[in-house]
Length: 273
Ligand code: ATR
Image 1 (tube, rainbow, N blue to C red):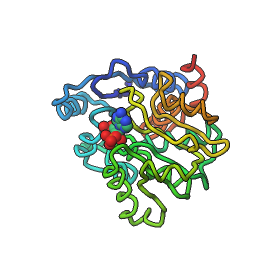
Image 2: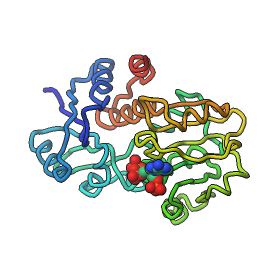
Image 3: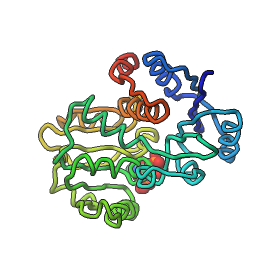
């Protein structure tokens, strides 16, 4: 019998996840179905209950339900605890297991698809919302180097910084919440835009000198050139959007559910025009 999965969000019609998982299933010979489901903003819990009652094996969760899904789960992976959010739920033995594959997806995209080794690299993470929190700890594990968080609202960057400095496994990392003035005197090997400005169209003020030689500028958004990507191109950085992260986080979820790791390169080649 075909095992059923879905992605739940609101809105969800734009999601590429059903196509990505269909390509994974074809490639690996797994007998699964995967659909996009829009839950009402006040109906996420009821949607999960319905899926479980109908025998679904799991689901991905996207904006704006990642925190609510995390709270609803009975068991949590350590990476979902660090992120305080989940994008991957598994339904097994009357329980709901929460994991988070966003950080692993970003790290794999940077290191494998972009061929940019993170170890020892100085990272600037822009943003301090859910998207930034979801990738912060995996980035530190991969870089093992100092990291700065820069956010329009400094207090939120400080709050995010504390999730690292107060964490038993991470407190040895040097993480700071940077103000714009402090950035003028620093250069970074990788600058990651985890703000929602790619969607809202806002601009992020950055010093012209922010990119170290051969730096990578990574925007977690995909689908169009953002002002951040244009700025980075003008200043000589290598530029990547978030499509690879989307495919890699999906592959990690597929692996959790099916125990098989798809070839993401082939799927990325299909998706990129
Ligand atoms: P997400 O879960 O996608 O991270 P979020 O929690 O609402 O969404 O966080 C949005 C992030 O984008 C925040 O870091 C926000 O900055 P503030 O904390 O100052 O609100 C950032 N952001 C949104 N619009 C922005 C803009 N026009 N300029 C700069 N930063 C912006």
